[in-house]
Each structure stands twice: as C-alpha cells, then as structure tokens.
Image (cartoon, rainbow, N blue to C red; front, side, top):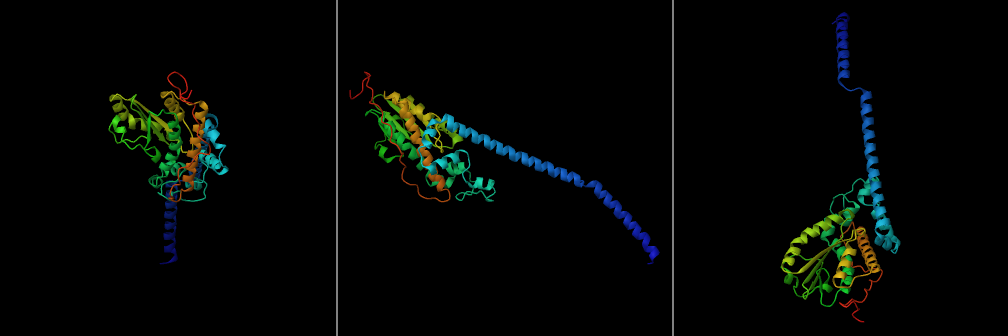
Length: 330
C-alpha cells in the first residue's frame, strides 16, 4: 500500500480517536469537580471529628462538675488518697486513662481490642463490662469490698432482736434458712434484716455500675425484687427494699444516705449527718481503690486480693434511743 493510500486512513483514525476522547471527556466528571468533591468530603470529616471532640469535652466537663460541686463524698475521699490513686481517679472521670480505645484515638496503636475478650477496650469496658473479668470474680470482689463496711455499720444500728444476714460475707451468714419464714424464694438479697417479733423484713441491694448506668441498675433491682416484696407483704410482713448505687469511679447518687437514714430511723437509732458523710467517703474510697486494681490487671486474669480495708475507721453510732427517748445505757 502506497503513501497516498495510507495517509487517508491515518487521518480517519486520528479523527475517530479525537471524537472518542471528546465523548469520554463529556461522560466523565472533570478534574475540578473531583477535587471539589474531595474537599467537601474532607471538610465533612473534619467537622465530624471536631463535633466528636466537642461532645467529649462537654461530657468531661459535666463529670468534673458533678465530682466538684455535687458529690462531696467523692471530693472528700479523693484528697485523702495516695497520689497514684488520685491520678487514676481523676483520669478515670475525664476519660484520659491509656485504654486501648484511647491509645488508638491518639494514633499510638492500630488495634483497640481487649486482650481478654477481643471487644473494643474502653475504660468503661475494663471497669464494668469485660466478660472474662466478670467470670473471674473481679467485679464481685469489688462489690463485696464495698458491701463489708456497709454491713458492719448497718449492724451497729440494729438492736439485738434483729437478725442480719449477708450471703456474700461468711461472717454474716446465718445458719438457718430464716428467709423462707418470710417467703420461699431463690432470690438472695445482699443484706437481709429480719425481726420476728415485729414481723419486719428489710432487704438491701448494692450495685457498683458504670456512672451512666446507676439509675438503670436501681430500676432493674426494684423490678427484680418487686414480686418478693409483694409476697412478703401479703404474708403480713412489714417489708422494705433499699437499693444502693455507688459507681465504679466512687460516685454516689444519695442512695446510701437514704438507706442508712431509713434503717436507723426504723429501729430508733438514726445516724448523724457526720456519720453518713463518713460512710459515703469510706465507700467511695474502697470502690475507687478496687477499680484501680481492676484497671492495673486489665491484661491478665490475676486472682483478686483479700477484701480491702478502708484507710479510716467506721463511725461509731450514738447510743440507741429507747422508747422513752433515753439511751439504753442511761
């Protein structure tokens, strides 16, 4: 094929190629529109990031405000503790402990999985929700650590006619199944008080949940024991249920104060405000201390130590008031 025959074919191919490029250019987005879309996406991602940071700061501020202005027991306890425990408590309430979730957020690691269960490891997860930690008994150990001084102080408010039974504390286990004299049940309240003569039946339930779940736990316990309250009342027992909530970080919601006041008044032995404040501080300290141990053991299933003891003595109640308004020993 000669040069004169080839040149028309080349021109035809060049023409067809130029038309195809023009068609593709019209059907695909321009470079400027792609850049604009990327910029818009980046701006949206930055806005979402800033919004999340702002929400976290607002949450941190609300927790700090609660601890400083509302919970005087936590405030009183925190400044009497060792520096390491104070540091843990402050960082725990503002979510700045080095959990794997935070380390990933700070771009120090790429995987935030809990070493014990492979779920996302937040501070709340370590202190409340890790299932292997739950099965190992850590959360029960913390619960019993806080329960012990409450049971000790409640006993000091009672006359000899009242039997106190605490199923989780061996020193408070009553040999006879006296709960069945009230009503046959498989439920086991944390603290049970029974006075046969007056047919008074009091249950106390303690929970140590995450800060944000305190109201939820109270509602759960009330519903759980509602049938027992109704059945015992139907059997002509004067029945009461008290729920106490102390958070994993040691915060109170007023439930311990209400419970101790109600029990003391029930048997004419009301505690003073100073005693109640002392009890709130003691339980805050113990709950925070136990949570600190759980935090330090987050990577391993170590056995729990013996029940912790408070750094201060339990308050001593005033002499019990008799029906005549005089002290028993007067």
